[in-house]
Amino acid sequence: MRNAERFGAKFATSIITTLNCVDRLIFKGYLPFGGDKQLNQFVDGLGIRRKDFLPQLEPLAEQLVEHAKTAAAQADASYHYLQGQHSKEQLIDKAIRERKLTTGLIAVLCCQENCRTVKLRHGEGRPQLAFACRPQRVLYYYYLDPDFGRIHVRIQTWFPFTVQIYVNGHDWLAQQLTKKRAGFVQRDNCFTQLDDPAAAQRQADDFFSLAWKSRLHQWAKRVNPLLKTVTWLRGMEYRWVIDQFEYSTDVLFRSRQSLAELYPRLLDHAAVHFSAQDILTFLGRKLHGNFQGEVLTQCQKDRHPGARIKHRMKNNWLKMYDKFGQVLRVETVINNPREFKVRRWRKRRGRRQKVWCPMNKGIINLYRYRTAAHAANMRYLEALSVVNDPAPAYQQVAALVQSKKAGQRRFAGFNPARREDVEFFRAVLRGEHELQGFRNADLRRLLRQDDHDPEQRRRNRAAIGRRLQRLRVRGLVAKIPHTRRWKVTSLGHQTLGICVRLYYHGLATAA
Image 1 (cartoon, rainbow, N blue to C red):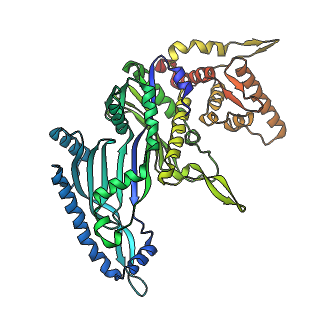
Image 2: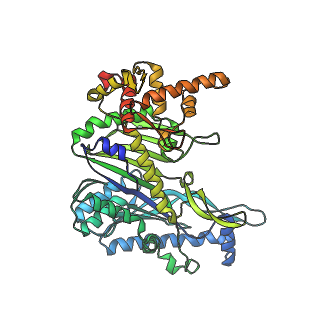
Image 3: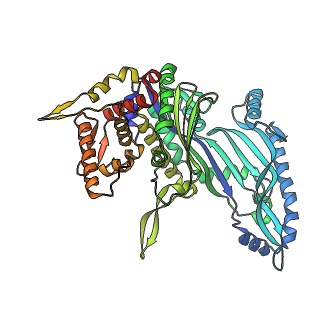
């Protein structure tokens, strides 16, 4: 898969390696009861009156709770009923330290949460069963799995007994590297040292080829004995979907000082220069008139333990933050996969063909989740490659100011202190151009030039063309062969980015 080549080349002297890996991954399992209509048909098929169905569920809930207590007792683990505000992670950390666990059941936590369950309501002629969100007991089984490290399996004790399973890709990778006796240092969900980064990346990529369906079924059966003991549940299997997917790109720096000097500049650049259209581009979308939703950026510099910037497009996020002052993490979080596309066989005009369709949450799309998130991370890092240390690099701006002779022609320089020139640089550097480059017309649109009058349009087009030629002879932009599109070179990203930053932040602040 493509890596952030410009970013890696730009800071090659400061970077040790880059690791792409799944972070948080949450699956949800649903038993096949469908919606309200299908539920009523199912209960009618059992020969049970609808008003008698709910009383039969209470002993099933108690059976699940007793099963949890028994499982905890057999594993010499603790069972806690939590009320009020509690940190589950702190309780589990404490249990691991006290019991010195390396594998097995850590603890079972029971608490009250609002979940989708069923209730009885008035209907025409007879009562109706309907799904609704109501408080109920839920059970959290925390395990140290020999393959996945720390995981938890959550099951709601009332019908329809939905299961949620949490795994962490970094913990899984740590377990695999340990089995292969590969050296590494892990802190929390992050690797601060890898003896063989290439082997670690190959192992991380194997995460997507696991037999997920069978493994998820095994975990679900472990916490839900009703699938064997209740007659009308026998033979049923959970349908698994991806509820949340986090994919991170970790850039390991050689020293804390290198990242400490660079990271504030990355935050400032992302907060100041990345527009809503840029965020959509990073996430593989284009801004159009039918787009309905919000695109927001939130930068928290007073956040403990480190500053973070978070871009949100509807219910999907793109984040950047540092880990332990040594790792720069760019992370894409997918909660709503329908904002992305996947190729599927569909019947079009009487014949089957592969077409791009909105991606759903089925686990069969796990590979596509990875592709979309990885591409978003790479686009984000490439857009950040314009950031540099302005103090030593300011000399590069001199070549931009001075006139340049090419052949028999002399091309004028630019004025980095002139607003019109800086706005032109910003238009050229827009993140949306990372995908396919830009045209003369794209720059005129971004600069809000009035093209209604044909003569004025001709003048504006010629003026933009002359500016592009002035950049081209300095090696800052290049023409894409056989097209009318241009692209910014690595030198252009560096030099023009410096000018934009200096103009908006000032040399004294930036240096």
